[in-house]
Image (cartoon, rainbow, N blue to C red):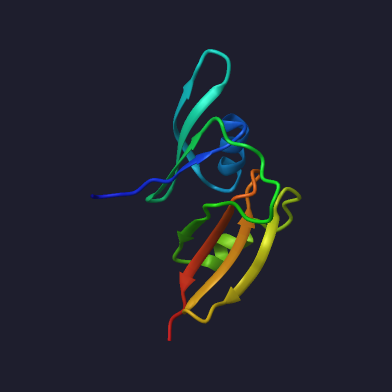
Length: 121
């Protein structure tokens, strides 16, 4: 095995892909059924994630899958979101007991995305 790419089932693939583009992901590929976008593959650096149609909106605090993205400069990445009205910030920058500096946002479907960096020293 060389990689694992999560596939998230969402109600609206096109809208979700646009939201992820807005936070820095790149849309690599999409598929359509003639009416709507049914699938998309996105990238953020070496990170890959796929979106697939057929998901339901979340009605609870957390979903069954969260994304964890490691970055070299989590504070700079956090600053990308300053002033964004559409940002659902779950937890702002904080140091964890397991040696990471992190912040957590929620995507439009309720999935959590944690951005983290190893704390040195």
